[in-house]
Image (tube, rainbow, N blue to C red; front, side, top):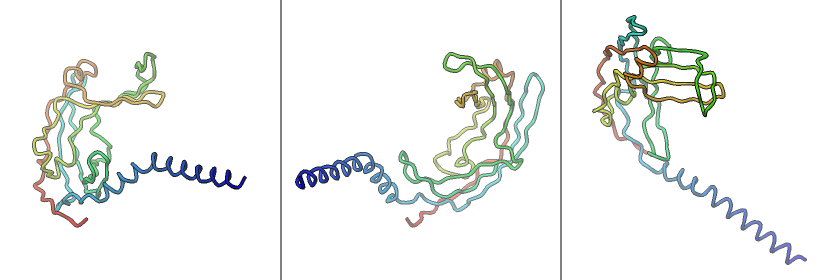
Length: 195
């Protein structure tokens, strides 16, 4: 009887350890691997303000949005796809969360074959903070004008987002982006740091 109890206990411990290893060891190795990578070079300039002006038409009436894009260094991030990277915070001096062109509530939409209530937002994305803060990887970046971005939130909690091209923007929302003027990106240097 003691022998059976010992065998069952040993096998139970072995199976528990094997299960732990199968499900957790890859994540543990990934965590150790990412943390052992060198830190990316740190920006010498960590804060920037970029005034901009967007001119657009909605239903034939011209409108102007003037604001300031604020980019701030936000430390290092870690991601299993790219390893360690520089994080940036992006905000607007006006306090707005985006450059909103249209916000429509209670629009009827279709998701998964059935009609649902939708909140639609159409906004202009001025581009990534990395571009404005002088990251070399974004040197060839061009603003997306005359295209815009959209976000549809469905009543069941699902959402869909993406880029909407100029033709569809005009046809579906009666919006035409006319011009985008922004401060140019800064010239920044990135300094190698200790791990």
